[in-house]
Image 1: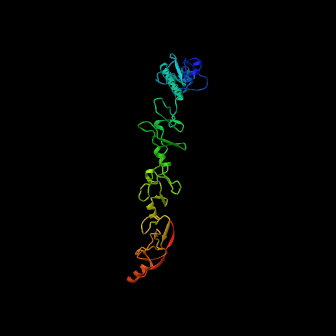
Image 2: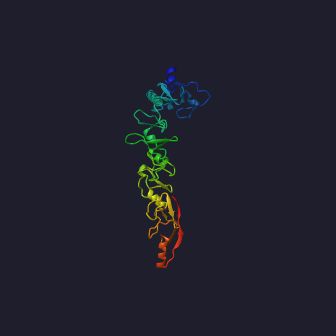
Image 3: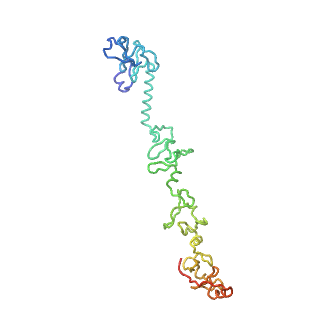
Length: 313
């Protein structure tokens, strides 16, 4: 091979003429490149020397691939510092050329960020984190499963902080949870505009904490950081009128016992005369002074005289 060809393929060699060392090899020992044993001075005249390979016993000078003997009558070829016969040298050169083609091809092909291998034209590619991936190598950081949809090849992934997550794990790890069903809230959410109610709900999950009924007019009451309809809020707040059992919002009459009334509902349990201040408690009912006197006289009992507190709720 000419020097020009050798520079193009530095690991290849043209036919190398063999020569027998007739000088005795000098005083320095020469190891045989075939058996690695030293070639003794008495064997120098029968040894074979090959350029860029080294010295061989005659019987050790064989093709590296097929192991058939090589001799001075046959020319050998050097490939990667080993001797080869004509046929196997051609085989090795062809293999090296194929490897070189693959190396060139790989330099031109995109590389998978998952395996660092080439992505060929017949393979499905996925783009994530600004890189190209084999479809089966793009995996969720959390569950380590492929996030390419098996049926249509589409990806359902989300990128966060330089990591890729499948949609399900991203929702579970990072999205707010619905206070109604404790599942992730992904799209439409309901929350309090004034900030008095913490958290979010799915639209379908937002309802009274007691009866679960929705709020058609979008208004609700908050008690203990939970939403309530009007009635159940007042029940929790103990602000249902003891007389009419309707919510009290505004002026309120409250007794020592903790009973609450609309002012116009606070009346004697017997005659229904409105009570404005003083009342008498008998058997958990409020009476006016006239009717409690009759009860005390006829039943021989005594009732406590008590005062009402008026305020607003």
